[in-house]
Image (cartoon, rainbow, N blue to C red; front, side, top):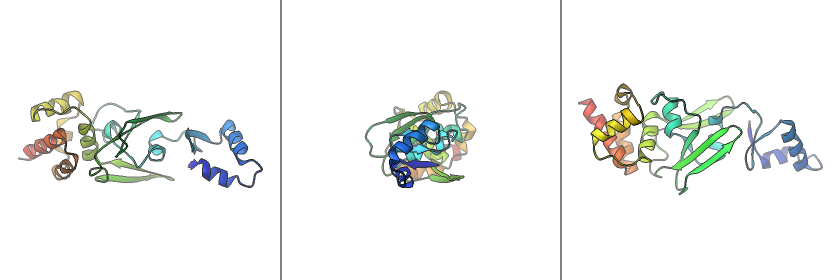
Length: 195
């Protein structure tokens, strides 16, 4: 279970020196520091369950979500997350893993997310369409749909069948929020595939 320093000090308020008690519990391995001000009770908790607590508001997206949905063949160990209006990319190296946070447009941020519960943990993850739009948003613009095909099928190694299963409607709505050449071209590609 993830807890803040304030929560733990409140729980230990009956001790003469709650901070010293917390330090002892950390040394004993009862609490594991995640980032400043944040602790986890379970050393073996999967990293993605902590992502939303480390930096936010955020949701899991980009390569991690694409791998999660099986859109890209690689197993991704770095938990990649989307934020908005933070202005710069953030990276956290923790005992649980590496976390990277980067901006997407504010208008697109709240759309097409799933809230998932695993035990006592909740996390938000982009749906497949949104994860791909987020990834394309961060990449250099392509000139046409043929170049987008090369980017999707050769560079990202996404199967054409997986692209054809994406919702054209969801991507069309998302494309209006990103103001991204790549996302607009993905919307055009899906429209052509449906004809």
